[in-house]
Image 1 (cartoon, rainbow, N blue to C red):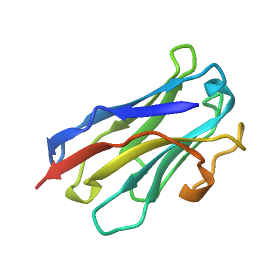
Image 2 (image 1 turned 90 degrees about the horizontal axis):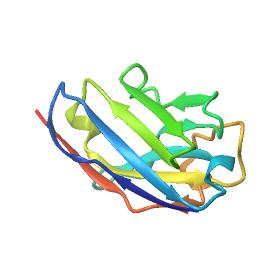
Image 3 (image 1 turned 90 degrees about the vertical axis):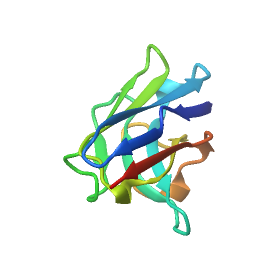
Image 4 (image 1 turned 135 degrees about the horizontal axis):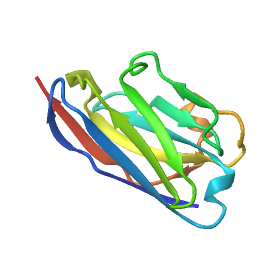
Length: 125
């Protein structure tokens, strides 16, 4: 499965933005998908994940209550709605599939094995 994240940009603190992840391949709907971000000089950080059906989601504590992950398997899309953005949310955001999981979600970035190119989010103070 191939993934491509897009929708990033420059946003003021307190603003909202929705990231999209487009997937190719008919097997996309079989896998859990996650959003992982990487800020300059920092390691990759799990942000949110969703199971194949969308019934299970998981969030990092730092984004809980502000971000919402969703998916549309009919359109091969995964979304990350981000509200109340903070400067510390600034990072490159990647979407990635965990081809070993369907119904559960991992919070470990290295367990995601199919990555797309990221999209840059910059939140100004």
